Length: 336
Image (cartoon, rainbow, N blue to C red; front, side):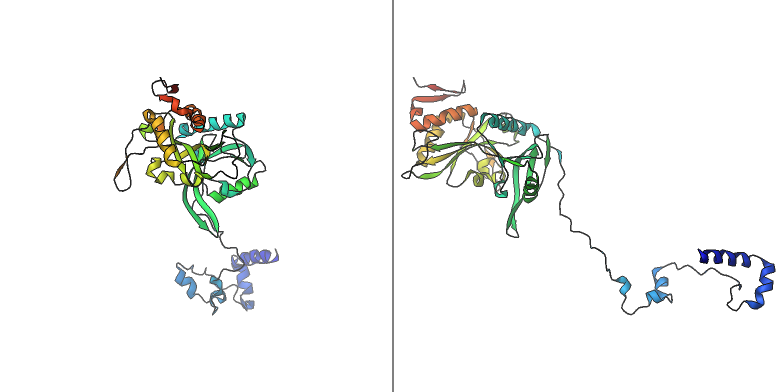
């Protein structure tokens, strides 16, 4: 404040010729000499050429960033929810899942393992049901499995979260839940689909039923009633993980519907029997693989899910040989 007062007083003296005349003989420091504003530098080079102690150091310390936090690393891609472009395709899946939760076919369990996140699985995050429609770019980083997911939310939005990001959110959510896949039980080698496997029995694999989520016009017009009945010696999750890149899955993601443990099952006999029984419902479609070669998948059928569920017990007890599938009524009828 004192320097400010002195500065204003000096300015007033300089503007008063009478005072300048009286003090001129006492001006040892040239305070009243003709005052000129210093020329302002017009370029960086002119600034650096000034005789300034701050810019004349030998180590150029002024150009070294110290005592400041570096910018935090940002992810390559930040997922933002947006309206799902084909939510009408997925809405029936949410309706079925809710119905199966109510009936007890599915169970809601606390999320506890990120390895449980696979294509076709349902979760509950912050009170909203989430469906994993696609698993893309699977990779392992720092010893941890990761992938880019396409998530469909029950409220009609979608996002492209990383698998580990979804797992982190589910861990943080006190109400984060995983919804189980309907499990029916062992097929063949037992009298009941829920009978436990004995020590003399052998689980030969898994029979799975999946629904196609293809957007091809020939598939979409069938309103979701296109099912693949297949067999794998591994898990269903592993089999369908790369469905969108597999011609046998019509190059499209799928929704797991049912799985059955195959006990003492003759795979060739099962496939021949089921394909012959549903021959009239087999989907007649031809697609091109990545090399342009035509492929005709044989394990896809256009029929109601209830018919498949009805046929399973009949396959178990062998009574299916006394029946046939009637395509006109879309039902199983007795042979005459």
